[in-house]
Image (tube, rainbow, N blue to C red; front, top):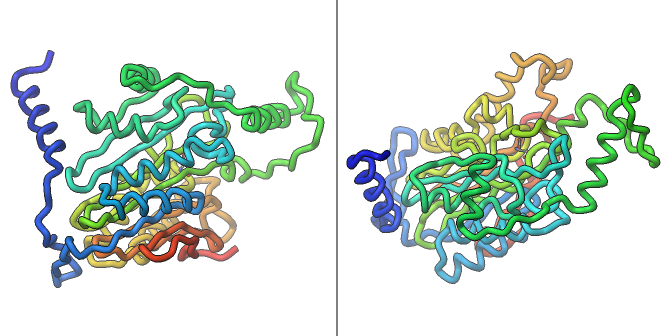
Length: 355
Ligand code: ASP
């Protein structure tokens, strides 16, 4: 049972969240040793996302122009991708775990209240980002997982659905049939590309979307079906605040896609925001965090090539309080989506290594 004190704290927290914690027009940003002020009321809205997020950035920008807050806008943006069966890395139609069950991870973070909510290993609900938001707004918790997350979603009226589309089921079955010639499954009738040692690491995707709205408020969301053929119950970086997403309303917002375990072990998005706090621009902040990941990856057996470079990919996306933004990847050739208020288009990510 909750003590009076806890209940009081919870009420305080709700009041705090509901009030939206209006920021003063001027927010302090520390840039190296020379702090400067940003007039929040003059902020131009910006939305960034992973490369699969052009429709999300379009939608979020439209909403922010209508005066909607950054969190409402980025969630509505990623809901489009979550609900689209053609994107097999997120939400409905996402690639399943090794048992053929789709398990989704998502987190949301709201800059003005410095609050967050997340769900992990959530089955049967196609918009996990909406459930993550309810965890933030309607509970005293930050993260719900598995069965508990599902029950929570159902109690809020979400509908239980089969998220495995025919397309995703066929990909899963091919994988299962081609894994071994020492089991009772015959190989798939049409030979699929022989998997190389890194193929498992390639079978994944996510959408991250972060925004700065016209009031100068930051927010972000990350949502995914995680690794294809993961062990049931595996949780990636996306629902973990500090790994797949982090927002500090005085500094900036950052999120990630790519090899989640590497990101979890290095608190990636948190470190991007911390580098921005130290005065680095978003691109440098993302690259510095990637460098840190690459250095640590040298310690992980099986995750580096003959030159000591990571064999996986990891991407960070960041926007700061001034509306500057960037995407960066370990490996050359990646893109990110950004709507800068004028154009919504894919841009090249900065990178550390070339193949
Ligand atoms: N980061 C996701 C995870 O590890 C996968 C991805 O973005 O590709 O679950």
